[in-house]
Length: 281
Image (cartoon, rainbow, N blue to C red):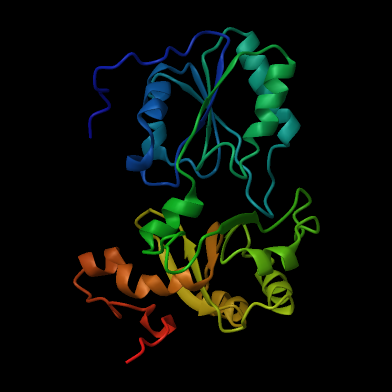
């Protein structure tokens, strides 16, 4: 694949600036052209754990600084990362802060941007494709479908301390959102599922868990709300994962395009048919 950009009036990453850029969900092909433009200009790249080598290799001229955070493992403190960005910008570097997915979707990009602005560092935001949409699309699950849902809620599975988020109104989400997409929710999925069921969600509601989204090692299991914790453990899945709760998961029976590309037929051409009311004679 070439790294050449088509003709356009591409923005210039200037010295002393920080661009906060989303690298997408993993597949290098899902990086935006503005992201590629940033990679080609950067003097230094401060990147997260979910940014792959294939993307970083598009910037052979740049210094790389790892700033990844992984649950349960030693990680850089957020304040230290933000201040490092300020330091690099003040040193006259062209700084690219590269984050998996989208920097403003559970990526702490807003915190970093706020710190930079407070220190007088000019910024540019380069959105990325978030895994909560793209990862599920690669698994054959549309997060919206007019026969299934008119709402979708994206929610984090843990708070800043790593515990299940207590500030989330799980009962309200259970009642108000037809499809729920959980980021970083594997650790607390049993607790979250129990709260959703207690608020009225069906224990048999479909659930899909996708790991290593959009990459060659992607795995997806289909389960139910009451069984998801046990099935995740039995499958040996490891984070990071995207978890989808709702009838949209059933559409994977028809739309698992990767399985079909490998020669498997659809399991059900119309998995929603059983949910439609019978037509009157």
